[in-house]
Amino acid sequence: MSPLSTAVAETPTGMELHAESVRVYRDRTRCSRELLERTKPLIPTGHAGGMWYQLPYPVCLDRAEGARVWDVDGNCYLDMRIGDWVIALGHRNENVRDAIVAQLDRAVQLGCPESGLALRMAELLCERMASVERVRFLASGTETNLLAIRLARAFSGRNKLAKARGAYHGIADILVVGDSSIGFDSAGIPAGVTPGVAQDVVEFPFNDPDLAEEVLERHGDEIAAVLIEPVMGAAGMVPATREFLQRLRDVTTRLGIVLIFDEVVTFPVAYGGAQAYFGVTPDLTTMSKSIGGGIPQAAVGGRADIMDLLDPDCYEGRAPVLAASTFGGNVTALASGIAAIEQLTPEVHEHVQRVGERMRLGIDEIGRKYAIPLHATGLGHLYGMHWAPERVVDHRTHMLEDMEKMANIMLGLLNEGVYQFAFGTLLLSASHSDAEIDEFLAKLERALHAVDLV
Image (cartoon, rainbow, N blue to C red; front, side, top):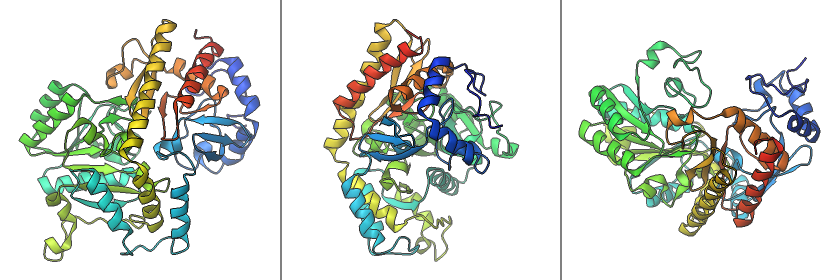
């Protein structure tokens, strides 16, 4: 019998869910549960491949519009996942749709130099991000982070990668070893990853400039790259401090280490990405998610002297670093991404910053109102909710969080019609207004009561 077949308050993870809320959830999502029952024998988790984590089981979505999504049972939700961090403008944006349809009438995929879409996209990225002098397109965040690391190794002549404890940069072997906030093996080497890969990774504490500098100094002659998210995404939506990022910049410059900003998640934070918001310039930047306008697209960009390692013309016809990606520079994704990015004006970014801050302040106020340790973190379109004894500022404080209480809050929100992750990471799009923020905060209060936490 499928593990989804029996309604119980305890989940396979050992967390106990509010029994009445589970009953309500199961009653309103019968079609989702039946679809998952049919799918799980063919696909692990019953989900095609993206983020899916919801308890007691995920909702299956059918359509979307603006800031709303509908599931296969017909339930409408305020969308706080925006296509898994992707739909920065809101669902079914007309300009993006028109660009995709127009491109489909020309060609879906060419896989070779085309009529100028790549040029236009490169111009947009280089104009926004002063650190990006050259750019290369790929298809996923994992892929672009791997290429950035390879470029750093080739440029520096060193082998090791340094990353923050608790960070998430994709599913490649070198990216998943070490401490993680999202469920990989706590021993530091997940199943299927060789110990040799782990030997090439050095970890430092997030938001602790002194200890991070100490770690980098200790291993400096071995480290090719520091890879850092300016806002830790899956690890709790925790923004870096400017002091921390600037210290990384200063230390990596002094030690000859390539500094890579992973802006896969943070690109929409500001016009020019999080690096523009914080005023700290990396050597390489990786991007994905929102730059495709809803279609898979990624890019690595940065200093010309590093990026030129990809150019055979700079090395007598044989580039030191090979980067082949069949769907890198897919013409449909380029057309979609151009239409999306052209609409991400400074005014749109300011709107998202404002409503995001309204959301975070509202969550903090609810925590104070009920004298509970509920609070928010985040920046711009990114925000997280935490039930923790200390404010979450890094991996250590994130791991103090009561995940069972958070899972119950998120279950209550699903029943109230808010679509999100079970572990408390939430997102906004430009289609979210003050009205949606007020709606969310009212539903959050009702959810807290429904699961008996206030």
